[in-house]
Image 1 (tube, rainbow, N blue to C red):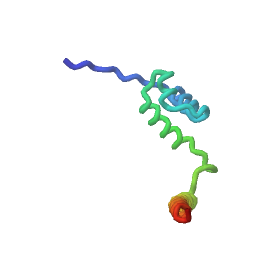
Image 2 (image 1 turned 90 degrees about the vertical axis):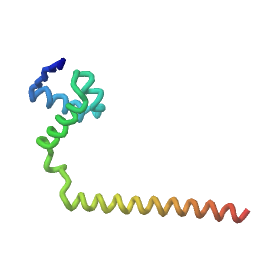
Image 3 (image 1 turned 180 degrees about the horizontal axis):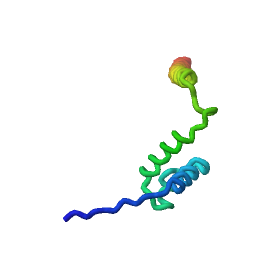
Image 4 (image 1 turned 135 degrees about the vertical axis):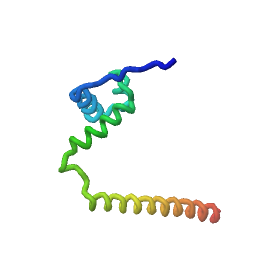
Length: 98
């Protein structure tokens, strides 16, 4: 016995409205989806498509900016590791002087 489920279809205006709500209010996707009776994964897919089609060219990162961001993230990670090492070393030497 197989139960067939009918697929609901939504208008593009409805999809865009939900996407705008997620973006403008910064509410979690799950909360917005639940309040409208839509699946969270469905809304996530709509949101990805919405952002692709409504991307602001002024705010979109270029390849050079993305490379710079990746370099800065790597440098930040290295500095955090060095800072952690220095904290441990200073704690070690502070104990040794007692």
